[in-house]
Every structure is written in C-alpha cells, then in structure tokens.
Image (cartoon, rainbow, N blue to C red):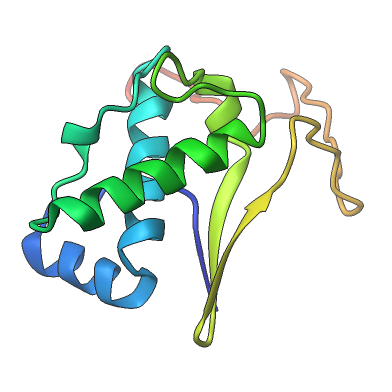
Amino acid sequence: MGIWKSLVAMDREDRKDMVYRLGWRYYYFLKIITKAMFIDGYRLKISDIKVRSSSKREEIYNWLLNFFAKYDVDASREIRMEFVKRFAVVELFDDKFIIDTGYDISVPKNYVKVECCEEDNEWLPRDRREE
C-alpha cells in the first residue's frame, strides 16, 4: 500500500517508476496538485501534460478538469492552495483511487499536549556554546 500526497520526484528513473506504479492519470493528478500547493491560484493548462500522444494528453486534461469540477473548481481558471492539500492518491495492490480528507483536521485520539516550563525544559540551551 502506498499513499501519495504530493510529487516532488526530479530524477527520471523516479518519475518512470511513479508512472509505472500509478499510471498517467494519477501521476499528473499528483503533479498538478503539487504545483497548486506551491503556486496559489494555479491554472491548469493542457501544455502541463507532457505525454507524446495528443489524444492521451486531452484525455488526461479532461479527466483532471472533470475531477475538479466535481468540487465546483474550474481548474483552467484557478486552483487554490488550501483546496488541493486535502487530496491524496492511494495505491492498494493494483487499485488506485483518490481520497479526500476534507478541510477539517481533527485532533488525533492519542494527542497529548505537554506544557513547557522554562525552568524544567532541559532542551533549552544553557549557555551560548550549547546554542
């Protein structure tokens, strides 16, 4: 099982492995949401999809537009940074699908908050040399 939240693979072999494992659609989905995470107001263009076949390029482009349209987002005009952070691609054996975690981030059940006290904090440097 693999969960892919973004795509930052720069190596050619890594990209080939990602395409082999995920397929072109999910690879470009991750590529587009990764760009949108770093470029707020990102606009999806057909030239962003670099496949040799023009019919495959259009198929992936239309699939992406339709996916975002389900969430009332016109990807050719603007994809907001906050919006794309909610998605991940899950690879489970031969199945691939996109999960939507939503905007609400709940506190985990095992969350423990430890208050810090200045005098008890052994992690603070004691002098300039420790810094």
